[in-house]
Image (cartoon, rainbow, N blue to C red; front, side):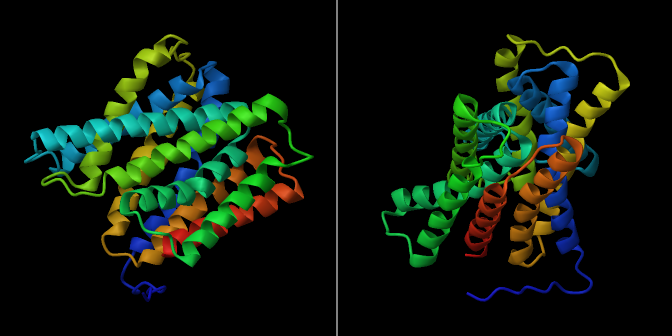
Length: 298
Protein backbone atom coordinates (compact mmCIF):
# COMPACT_ATOMS: atom_id res chain seq x y z
CA UNK A 1 0.00 0.00 0.00
CA UNK A 2 1.50 3.33 -1.05
CA UNK A 3 1.36 6.35 1.22
CA UNK A 4 1.29 9.93 0.00
CA UNK A 5 3.90 11.58 2.22
CA UNK A 6 3.59 15.11 0.89
CA UNK A 7 0.34 16.96 1.51
CA UNK A 8 -1.08 19.31 -1.09
CA UNK A 9 0.10 22.92 -0.73
CA UNK A 10 -3.42 24.20 -0.04
CA UNK A 11 -4.11 21.48 2.52
CA UNK A 12 -3.49 22.73 6.06
CA UNK A 13 -4.58 19.48 7.69
CA UNK A 14 -0.97 18.27 8.05
CA UNK A 15 -0.10 21.30 10.17
CA UNK A 16 -3.29 20.73 12.18
CA UNK A 17 -2.29 17.14 12.97
CA UNK A 18 1.26 18.12 13.91
CA UNK A 19 -0.13 20.82 16.21
CA UNK A 20 -2.39 18.23 17.85
CA UNK A 21 0.56 15.94 18.53
CA UNK A 22 2.59 18.72 20.13
CA UNK A 23 -0.36 19.82 22.28
CA UNK A 24 -0.97 16.23 23.42
CA UNK A 25 2.63 16.10 24.60
CA UNK A 26 1.98 18.93 27.07
CA UNK A 27 -0.82 17.02 28.83
CA UNK A 28 1.38 14.92 31.10
CA UNK A 29 3.48 17.92 32.12
CA UNK A 30 0.50 20.16 32.92
CA UNK A 31 -1.19 17.32 34.80
CA UNK A 32 1.95 16.71 36.86
CA UNK A 33 2.21 20.43 37.69
CA UNK A 34 -1.47 20.56 38.67
CA UNK A 35 -1.08 17.54 40.98
CA UNK A 36 1.92 19.16 42.66
CA UNK A 37 0.43 22.65 43.04
CA UNK A 38 -3.05 21.56 44.19
CA UNK A 39 -1.96 18.39 46.05
CA UNK A 40 -4.32 16.30 43.93
CA UNK A 41 -4.22 12.56 43.38
CA UNK A 42 -3.62 11.12 39.94
CA UNK A 43 -7.27 10.12 39.58
CA UNK A 44 -8.41 13.64 40.50
CA UNK A 45 -6.16 15.12 37.81
CA UNK A 46 -7.53 12.63 35.26
CA UNK A 47 -11.11 13.48 36.26
CA UNK A 48 -10.52 17.22 35.88
CA UNK A 49 -8.91 16.73 32.49
CA UNK A 50 -11.85 14.73 31.13
CA UNK A 51 -14.54 16.88 32.74
CA UNK A 52 -13.11 20.17 31.48
CA UNK A 53 -12.13 18.78 28.09
CA UNK A 54 -15.48 17.09 27.55
CA UNK A 55 -17.41 20.17 28.65
CA UNK A 56 -15.48 22.44 26.30
CA UNK A 57 -15.80 20.01 23.39
CA UNK A 58 -19.57 19.77 23.89
CA UNK A 59 -19.77 23.58 24.08
CA UNK A 60 -17.90 23.76 20.77
CA UNK A 61 -20.35 21.31 19.25
CA UNK A 62 -23.25 23.40 20.52
CA UNK A 63 -21.85 26.60 18.99
CA UNK A 64 -21.08 24.94 15.65
CA UNK A 65 -24.44 23.16 15.43
CA UNK A 66 -22.93 19.74 16.02
CA UNK A 67 -25.57 18.77 18.55
CA UNK A 68 -28.38 18.81 16.00
CA UNK A 69 -29.71 15.36 15.25
CA UNK A 70 -27.74 13.76 18.07
CA UNK A 71 -28.74 10.06 18.09
CA UNK A 72 -30.42 8.67 21.20
CA UNK A 73 -30.42 5.03 20.21
CA UNK A 74 -29.27 2.22 22.47
CA UNK A 75 -26.23 1.68 20.24
CA UNK A 76 -25.20 5.35 20.49
CA UNK A 77 -25.62 5.45 24.27
CA UNK A 78 -23.68 2.21 24.60
CA UNK A 79 -20.84 3.56 22.47
CA UNK A 80 -20.57 6.73 24.57
CA UNK A 81 -20.58 4.74 27.83
CA UNK A 82 -17.93 2.36 26.47
CA UNK A 83 -15.79 5.26 25.26
CA UNK A 84 -16.18 7.09 28.56
CA UNK A 85 -15.25 4.06 30.62
CA UNK A 86 -12.17 3.29 28.57
CA UNK A 87 -11.06 6.95 28.45
CA UNK A 88 -11.42 7.14 32.24
CA UNK A 89 -9.41 3.94 32.64
CA UNK A 90 -6.74 5.17 30.22
CA UNK A 91 -6.36 8.64 31.75
CA UNK A 92 -6.44 7.37 35.32
CA UNK A 93 -3.79 4.72 34.64
CA UNK A 94 -1.61 7.20 32.74
CA UNK A 95 -1.54 9.81 35.50
CA UNK A 96 -0.90 7.09 38.09
CA UNK A 97 2.12 6.10 35.98
CA UNK A 98 3.28 9.73 35.92
CA UNK A 99 2.88 9.87 39.71
CA UNK A 100 5.15 6.86 40.27
CA UNK A 101 7.81 7.40 37.61
CA UNK A 102 8.10 10.46 35.38
CA UNK A 103 6.27 12.24 32.58
CA UNK A 104 8.83 11.24 29.95
CA UNK A 105 9.09 7.53 30.79
CA UNK A 106 5.34 7.15 31.45
CA UNK A 107 4.47 8.71 28.09
CA UNK A 108 7.09 6.75 26.16
CA UNK A 109 6.09 3.45 27.79
CA UNK A 110 2.37 4.05 27.19
CA UNK A 111 2.59 5.21 23.59
CA UNK A 112 5.44 2.85 22.67
CA UNK A 113 3.66 -0.32 23.83
CA UNK A 114 0.30 0.65 22.35
CA UNK A 115 1.08 -1.11 19.01
CA UNK A 116 1.80 -4.32 20.92
CA UNK A 117 -1.64 -4.47 22.52
CA UNK A 118 -3.38 -3.41 19.29
CA UNK A 119 -1.57 -6.16 17.37
CA UNK A 120 -2.35 -8.79 20.03
CA UNK A 121 -5.99 -7.73 20.11
CA UNK A 122 -6.17 -7.95 16.33
CA UNK A 123 -4.68 -11.45 16.39
CA UNK A 124 -7.24 -12.59 18.97
CA UNK A 125 -10.11 -11.05 17.02
CA UNK A 126 -9.13 -12.28 13.55
CA UNK A 127 -7.30 -15.46 14.67
CA UNK A 128 -4.67 -14.76 12.07
CA UNK A 129 -0.93 -14.78 12.61
CA UNK A 130 0.58 -11.27 12.47
CA UNK A 131 2.83 -10.56 9.49
CA UNK A 132 6.57 -10.03 9.74
CA UNK A 133 6.55 -6.19 9.94
CA UNK A 134 3.99 -6.34 12.76
CA UNK A 135 6.12 -8.84 14.68
CA UNK A 136 9.14 -6.59 14.11
CA UNK A 137 7.21 -3.60 15.48
CA UNK A 138 6.21 -5.61 18.57
CA UNK A 139 9.77 -6.76 19.16
CA UNK A 140 11.07 -3.21 18.76
CA UNK A 141 8.48 -1.83 21.19
CA UNK A 142 9.28 -4.48 23.83
CA UNK A 143 13.02 -3.83 23.48
CA UNK A 144 12.40 -0.10 23.84
CA UNK A 145 10.36 -0.68 27.00
CA UNK A 146 13.14 -2.79 28.53
CA UNK A 147 15.74 -0.10 27.79
CA UNK A 148 13.44 2.60 29.20
CA UNK A 149 13.03 0.75 32.49
CA UNK A 150 16.67 -0.34 32.75
CA UNK A 151 18.18 3.04 33.43
CA UNK A 152 21.06 3.08 35.95
CA UNK A 153 20.98 6.88 36.02
CA UNK A 154 17.20 7.03 36.39
CA UNK A 155 15.52 8.88 39.23
CA UNK A 156 13.12 6.03 40.07
CA UNK A 157 13.94 2.44 40.95
CA UNK A 158 12.50 -0.48 42.84
CA UNK A 159 8.79 -0.89 43.47
CA UNK A 160 7.94 2.64 42.30
CA UNK A 161 9.45 1.92 38.90
CA UNK A 162 7.57 -1.39 38.68
CA UNK A 163 4.30 0.29 39.69
CA UNK A 164 4.78 3.14 37.21
CA UNK A 165 5.55 0.83 34.30
CA UNK A 166 2.62 -1.36 35.29
CA UNK A 167 0.19 1.56 35.20
CA UNK A 168 1.69 2.74 31.88
CA UNK A 169 1.02 -0.71 30.42
CA UNK A 170 -2.55 -0.58 31.76
CA UNK A 171 -2.98 2.82 30.09
CA UNK A 172 -1.75 1.40 26.78
CA UNK A 173 -4.08 -1.59 27.20
CA UNK A 174 -7.04 0.72 27.82
CA UNK A 175 -6.35 2.84 24.76
CA UNK A 176 -5.78 -0.26 22.62
CA UNK A 177 -9.16 -1.60 23.76
CA UNK A 178 -10.72 1.75 22.87
CA UNK A 179 -9.14 1.55 19.42
CA UNK A 180 -10.32 -1.99 18.75
CA UNK A 181 -13.78 -1.87 20.30
CA UNK A 182 -14.95 1.37 18.68
CA UNK A 183 -14.16 0.61 15.04
CA UNK A 184 -17.78 -0.04 14.05
CA UNK A 185 -19.53 3.15 12.94
CA UNK A 186 -22.67 4.22 14.80
CA UNK A 187 -25.11 6.17 12.61
CA UNK A 188 -25.19 9.85 13.57
CA UNK A 189 -22.27 9.53 15.98
CA UNK A 190 -19.10 10.90 14.39
CA UNK A 191 -15.67 10.69 16.11
CA UNK A 192 -15.83 14.23 17.52
CA UNK A 193 -19.23 13.67 19.10
CA UNK A 194 -18.10 10.34 20.50
CA UNK A 195 -14.95 11.84 21.99
CA UNK A 196 -16.71 14.90 23.46
CA UNK A 197 -19.43 12.95 25.24
CA UNK A 198 -17.01 10.12 26.01
CA UNK A 199 -14.62 12.49 27.80
CA UNK A 200 -17.43 13.99 29.87
CA UNK A 201 -18.75 10.53 30.72
CA UNK A 202 -15.29 9.30 31.67
CA UNK A 203 -14.79 12.30 33.94
CA UNK A 204 -18.14 11.69 35.64
CA UNK A 205 -17.27 8.02 36.16
CA UNK A 206 -13.92 8.95 37.74
CA UNK A 207 -15.35 11.68 39.99
CA UNK A 208 -16.79 9.45 42.80
CA UNK A 209 -13.44 7.68 43.15
CA UNK A 210 -11.47 10.92 42.91
CA UNK A 211 -13.61 12.57 45.60
CA UNK A 212 -12.36 10.05 48.17
CA UNK A 213 -8.87 11.55 47.86
CA UNK A 214 -10.04 15.15 47.44
CA UNK A 215 -10.77 17.29 44.40
CA UNK A 216 -10.68 20.78 45.88
CA UNK A 217 -8.72 23.31 43.82
CA UNK A 218 -6.98 26.18 45.61
CA UNK A 219 -8.37 29.46 44.33
CA UNK A 220 -4.98 30.64 43.11
CA UNK A 221 -4.67 32.07 39.58
CA UNK A 222 -1.75 29.82 38.66
CA UNK A 223 -3.53 26.63 39.81
CA UNK A 224 -6.80 27.52 38.10
CA UNK A 225 -4.92 28.45 34.91
CA UNK A 226 -3.10 25.09 34.95
CA UNK A 227 -6.38 23.19 35.34
CA UNK A 228 -7.98 25.22 32.56
CA UNK A 229 -4.99 24.60 30.30
CA UNK A 230 -5.01 20.83 30.97
CA UNK A 231 -8.67 20.48 30.09
CA UNK A 232 -8.64 22.83 27.12
CA UNK A 233 -5.38 22.85 25.16
CA UNK A 234 -4.01 19.26 25.26
CA UNK A 235 -7.51 17.79 25.52
CA UNK A 236 -10.42 19.68 23.88
CA UNK A 237 -8.34 21.72 21.40
CA UNK A 238 -5.93 18.90 20.53
CA UNK A 239 -8.64 16.32 19.88
CA UNK A 240 -10.68 18.79 17.86
CA UNK A 241 -7.63 19.64 15.74
CA UNK A 242 -6.83 15.96 15.29
CA UNK A 243 -10.29 15.02 14.02
CA UNK A 244 -10.41 18.04 11.71
CA UNK A 245 -7.01 17.16 10.28
CA UNK A 246 -7.94 13.53 9.68
CA UNK A 247 -10.57 14.56 7.14
CA UNK A 248 -8.13 15.38 4.34
CA UNK A 249 -4.56 14.71 5.50
CA UNK A 250 -2.29 12.02 4.12
CA UNK A 251 -2.16 9.04 6.54
CA UNK A 252 1.52 9.58 7.30
CA UNK A 253 0.71 12.79 9.16
CA UNK A 254 -1.51 10.94 11.63
CA UNK A 255 1.59 8.92 12.49
CA UNK A 256 3.64 12.09 12.87
CA UNK A 257 1.07 13.47 15.31
CA UNK A 258 1.39 10.34 17.44
CA UNK A 259 5.19 10.46 17.32
CA UNK A 260 5.32 14.08 18.44
CA UNK A 261 3.41 13.40 21.66
CA UNK A 262 6.12 11.38 23.50
CA UNK A 263 8.88 13.54 22.03
CA UNK A 264 7.24 16.74 23.28
CA UNK A 265 6.55 15.20 26.69
CA UNK A 266 10.16 14.05 27.08
CA UNK A 267 11.69 17.38 26.06
CA UNK A 268 9.35 19.47 28.22
CA UNK A 269 9.83 17.24 31.26
CA UNK A 270 13.60 17.64 30.95
CA UNK A 271 13.40 21.43 30.50
CA UNK A 272 10.65 22.22 33.03
CA UNK A 273 10.79 19.41 35.60
CA UNK A 274 14.48 18.59 35.39
CA UNK A 275 13.85 14.91 34.63
CA UNK A 276 16.67 12.81 33.25
CA UNK A 277 16.96 9.89 30.85
CA UNK A 278 20.14 7.82 30.64
CA UNK A 279 21.70 6.83 27.33
CA UNK A 280 19.88 3.49 27.55
CA UNK A 281 16.65 5.34 28.23
CA UNK A 282 17.06 7.53 25.15
CA UNK A 283 17.76 4.43 23.04
CA UNK A 284 14.60 2.86 24.44
CA UNK A 285 12.63 6.00 23.63
CA UNK A 286 13.93 5.97 20.07
CA UNK A 287 12.97 2.31 19.62
CA UNK A 288 9.49 2.98 21.01
CA UNK A 289 9.00 5.79 18.50
CA UNK A 290 10.25 3.59 15.64
CA UNK A 291 7.79 0.86 16.65
CA UNK A 292 4.94 3.35 16.78
CA UNK A 293 5.89 4.79 13.39
CA UNK A 294 6.02 1.36 11.74
CA UNK A 295 2.67 0.42 13.29
CA UNK A 296 0.95 3.64 12.23
CA UNK A 297 2.37 3.47 8.69
CA UNK A 298 0.94 -0.03 8.26
